[in-house]
Amino acid sequence: MDAKRWEQIQSIFEKVVDADLNQRDKLLQKYCGDDDGLKKEIDSLLKADADESSLLEKPLVELIDIAQSISLVGKKIGEYHLISQIGYGGMGEVYLAERDEKQFKQKVALKIIKKGMDSTETIRRFQTERQILAKLVHPNIASLYDGGITENGLPYFTMEYIEGEAISKYCDNHQLPINERIKLCQQVLDAVQYAHKNFIVHRDLKPANIIVTLDGKLKLLDFGIAKLIAEDELGEFNSEMTQTGYRLMTPGYASPEQVKGEPITTSSDVYSLGVLLYELLSGQSPYDTSGKTQGELEQIICHTDPKKPSTVFTQKANSSLKK
Image 1: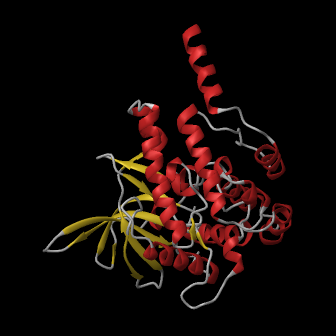
Image 2 (image 1 turned 60 degrees about the vertical axis):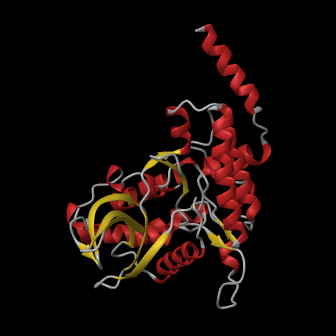
Image 3 (image 1 turned 120 degrees about the vertical axis):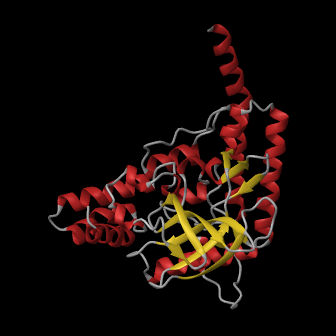
């Protein structure tokens, strides 16, 4: 696939991804016309974007053939040399980068808007994320370092590079007992409470965004869809910031108000934390949301009572003993 074709896909994806599900087919028909191949490629991205795993958690090259020439690996942005690509989303890319100066060397995660996706709306979201990160200074939240504009006019920012495992994998791989799992969750609660005190709702709390480092420290990541819930520094209130669509959530950890598209408050994060704790204690999610439509998700999350974590744990233990 050449770069021009990829930029066309990105442009249409951005126009369609935030639309109501009922309107997507009409928009795809409008922008793709008789190009069935183009429609199929964009549809695959939309399905992946709605999957329980965020696009930033897996390379997009697994979903679509992207020309290697698009990669920025080996290039220099500001004072940073880009070493490898560690994340690829619908709007932006994340690279492992290194600042190489005589006085010190520093590895960072560098996030940049992809070429062709630098619309006014995308840049606004990107700047909002940077603004949110700048407000958060907490030992359990990945730190923002700096940012700027590339020679091509693309915004970027750098932040703390975190090496480790998702909290669920860390607990299982280290066979942590229940009390140790709860202690880790308490650190998550502390970080989220700090964000809430700064009028910020994360909106995508899940194991992949909660990393335990190699030395056992917990870090909360990815405020890419987080929103301010109070007046910003300019004294302007943007009601859109408390709204969400199907895309701006991870179904397996989404709250009822996220699923129904209702205004988001701090209680939405509290609900997601409950799902996280349920998973860490029982070993499975309270709901099976994979491959479900929006209507099915609403029915499951809003109208179904999951089994108690203790019940799930006991059933698993009994099943293991029988084997």
